[in-house]
Each structure stands twice: as C-alpha cells, then as structure tokens.
Amino acid sequence: GESVGLHLPTLSVQEGDNSIINCAYSNSASDYFIWYKQESGKGPQFIIDIRSNMDKRQGQRVTVLLNKTVKHLSLQIAATQPGDSAVYFCAENPTNFGNEKLTFGTGTRLTIIP
Amino acid sequence: DTGVSQDPRHKITKRGQNVTFRCDPISEHNRLYWYRQTLGQGPEFLTYFQNEAQLEKSRLLSDRFSAERPKGSFSTLEIQRTEQGDSAMYLCASSYFNSGYTFGSGTRLTVV
Image (tube, rainbow over all chains, first blue to last red; front, side):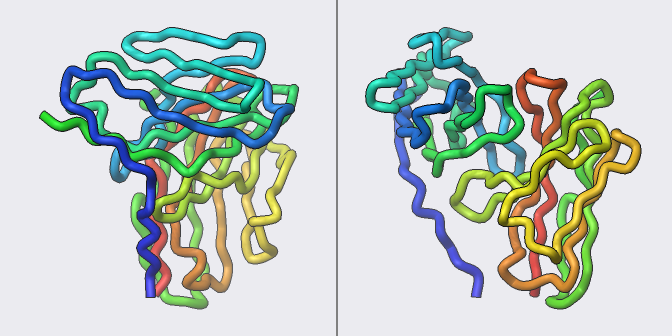
C-alpha cells in the first residue's frame, strides 16, 4: 500500500509571534543556500537565499542565518501570519558554478495558531 | 507569462503503462530542471537542461525514465512501464543561468 511517511518535524507558533526554523546541511563545499515554502498541492516557492560569503541576510519579515562552522542554517519569520502555515525546506547547492541542482532537506511543517 | 506550467496536474495510471508529463518554463529561462517529491520528503533532483542539452542526470533516473527538451523551450518527462514506486509529485523548475529557480505546481502521479 501507499506509505504515509508524514513524519516531518513540526513547529506550532501563535499568530504574531516570531518563528525560527532550523536546518543542518551536509556538504561543506556548498556555497549557496535557499529557503523554500511549500503549501499543500503547490510547488516550492522561493523565500530567501544566502551565499557562503555572508552569515546573515534579511528580507521582508524573514531573516536567514548561516553558520558555516557547524553547517547550520536558520530561517526566522517575524510577526507570523496564518498564511505562513506551510512546509519549509532548506536547500543547498553543492557546486561552485551556480544552481545546476539543489539538495533539499526533509522540511519542517510550520503551523500558525490564530 | 504566468510562471512555470505543468500538465497534467494529476495522473492516475495502471502499473505497466507509460506516462508523459509536460513542462512549460518561463519563456526567457534557459535552464529547466525536473525533480521528484514523495510524501513527506523534500524534492530530489532528477535531471536538468540548459537550452536543449541535457547536462546532468541523477542516478534516480532509471532507464525507464527519459526527458527531452527538443527546442530548448518546453520539456517532457516520460516514464515507461510504470511501477508503484514511481508514485510521486514530479516538479519542474526553470531559471536563467544562476538566477533563482521558479517551480511549477507539479504533476502528481499515482500508479495503481
């Protein structure tokens, strides 16, 4: 039969609070990292990216932090809204020549509680 | 241009049948990618094209899978002799060289 396999890490946050989603990446040679948001039935949607020569980048309500020492990436979402409820994936580009292919993490399901 | 389009959105097929999916990228994008996503997992890279040239294929792409991009615009992904393990969401994305990917909404394949 069909496997269920829905054992994503989950995070529930009260509307209006800040959320932090973490990701550990595997390849120390990766030089480009992206966070994607995926809503049910849709493809991944770009949120924010960061290159390895930076340790922080900010967008609108989102901030990505990169710690190359421990190969850790985090996504901070400020003042969360119901529309932020989705699965969030980090992705890494394990080459030095741009985004020919990405390696995605498992994902975290974020639920915003009204 | 409304983004990356994939057709069909859903496909149910019997085991052993062949299926073909289509992807229309953003018109000025020269790179096109195929990924597969199973329930609860992140997308996994299958293959990518730069213009009409297929430049990389994953080991996930068995010989039952073939992808084409004949004129450097739309692409097709064909799966021959489908198996239940092929059930997944097949995602297409496009980019212009090193710009960020734009994903389509995917084709969900169910093999019964």
